[in-house]
Length: 298
Image 1 (cartoon, rainbow, N blue to C red):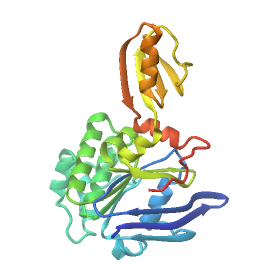
Image 2: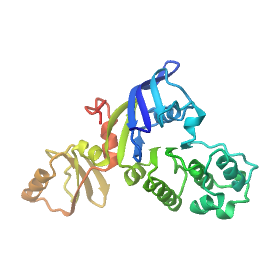
Image 3: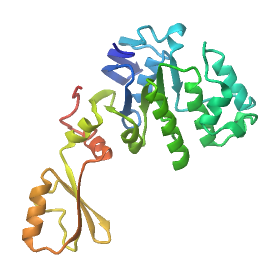
Image 4: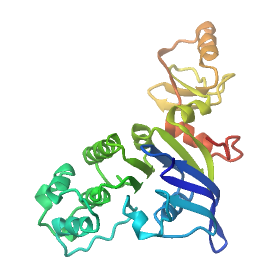
């Protein structure tokens, strides 16, 4: 069973193809992170899943129904990139209004306490800071106890503390069995939250796999070492960076061979560290031109 089904979807805007034959299934209880550069098609895909737009080709199903059907969307919560909150309404009034569209909403006081907005209950939304508006927008996506939540750049503009608080709220919702599909430019956010990662670039799904699977596809290890000798052009080094204080970051498919060569070379070095690729490095590899992973399926 799936709660989101996207089958062979293409969506064009004039001469621009925003999505090109995209297919995606999301099962109940999954927490899926969607990565892609600006203009990749992430927001367009969410707009199709939420019923705001219809595909030119292909089909989209939400909770087994048509996402353009209001009865289907009762089980959906969404936080768009930009939320137009009525500036003269108080925070509590907005939550009451949105909650009134659902059969069993979260009580307003409980929801505002969860998102640290209790002291803003009687404040007009127009007087809130950007971070407070973002917290309210995510809170509104959960007020109806939805089965599925779509979060488009949910923590944009938030400081570290507020971001962590929202991550906790998302984890709590997911732990209760909720399904989450989120987009983010914060790679560490997807790495911290997602169990599965979908990479989209130029309207095409480049990769769809578990978080560990995505990281393992890169095949590179990062070797960090402090030395006065330039190692960036050594054999086996795919690319290298000088980070200051004599530290070099070396990316290689065979860290063991590189370290053996370093030890036997007689080069003086210290602070040697080796680790796998980060999600940021994996993402950079997948959206690179002529990438062999293009179109790779789950």
